[in-house]
Image (cartoon, rainbow, N blue to C red):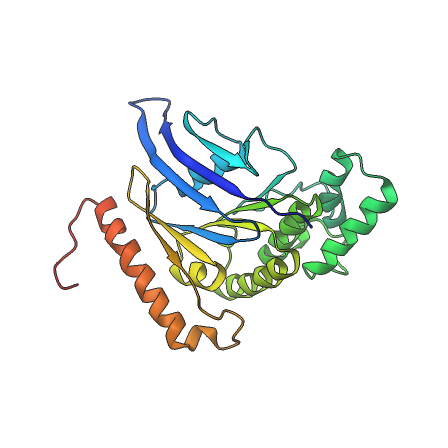
Length: 266
């Protein structure tokens, strides 16, 4: 299993709509993400969280500043970076096995090896017995498990996740959060996880990068020493206090994004 180190250095990005003036989406963003670290990007809607993730993935051009992957400039999308979207992005005409095999086939990996690797990741995400099922036959949580298995199978150094559980119901979302932590502990990928959910960020991440209202900047980086392996972690004082700490930071930016002021004493 591979992992990678990411350096984001003074990145700016303009969003250019089809009509109207360009909008400064990101301004002077700098962030260093260590190898095997799980970092959450958290902030109000429209602050540029997903834009920053797509810049890391090579899906958008870097206009000013730089992004380095293991000390080399991040190029176009490649197998060194895997991405998991909110809406699964599975091929509907392929089975679970076919979806997971797709990237391995593109890499030219020998048939026996790719079959073995695909099965190992299908097993890892708990989809044993559903190898021949099509996406239309799966629940939302199962589709996201398949998407994660497909991404992990190509062994990227970095796993980029754009609100991957945002479209799931609350119960499935909590189950998938726990599953993702288990997978991360086994694979030790470098993970960058975009979310608007403070509890989700505190449960999953080693550090939480709180972004400001547009134009998005890194407002602060919160270390997260909470013991997330505690089966009762959500009830612990440390977890509740950390959620409150991070929420206060996010709330201030959310209010700014709405053009209002934070009332005193609130």
